[in-house]
Length: 137
Image (cartoon, rainbow, N blue to C red; front, side, top):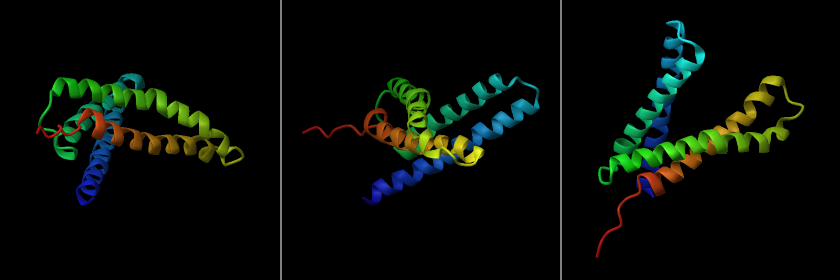
């Protein structure tokens, strides 16, 4: 159980690093005059590349396995989580924030979706994308 806790802590640290790369990159790119959509695409892509690299080598220590296959699975899991799971969670929980302050009603469902997305990513990264090879007898 101690190893699993350490993995979860590393996952959290990588998430913080990815978020900082995205936010700082986005800010610098927009200040440099890039259109918002272009800046966002570049900054989130940089965060995703960092996330794959650090989760593979640092979080899950998945030195074995085909890197290309892991990268494709990583993108599919991450993209599905961002573009399908998060919107569904937002739609499901938005009613729970009815009557709340506008900012809370807007941000609350997104925060719930992000938390759900973190769990989604951790489970699928650990069990599908970077799963440890089965010991052969």
